[in-house]
Length: 254
Image (tube, rainbow, N blue to C red; front, top):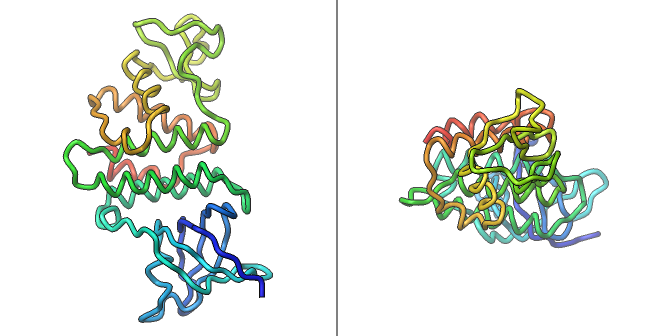
């Protein structure tokens, strides 16, 4: 029997058969993997708490022919405040979908695991706290994920001529890979970006999710930053993430 341990975060958990759960896990040691938790939906199952979406747990798995099987679990973090809030659930759902979309099976990336776990913790700490923003933590995660995937947007200089944007602002062209000055703008679909918003994006790109959750932004700046985030994702995923609309309804409109 080929048994192995991983530290994993549950990206998705779906009903399977009468009592099982089918899991998508992002783990520190193995990267993304699929597994089945047999009997997890039975009353009193010892696996139940550890295989809920967004839970972080130590998992003992048996390497199966088609799907690995979870045999034992030890819950590390459940993020209870996040689970009790629709905004927190929406933000965590977006994070989980993005990790699933940007990763391949069995391709571990410890930096991404740490980013995901840290962002879930920041979201959990931010729920219901004055001066804390689920949106800021989410944007820091998106920029961190894009950087780890090799798609970090260029924010300091025009992607075409290399000049620094002036105080009057610039444009953001996601397919081109970053900011574009007024002289080089060639696409009417490029987003207008104020100098304040550009600097906020630079700050978010270098911030931890915990620090980003404390960032207070004006509605105008938040609107511009949000537009840049979704345009970056659409450019790389060839469409808007399924969880984006739910996230916007619960978080972006707050």
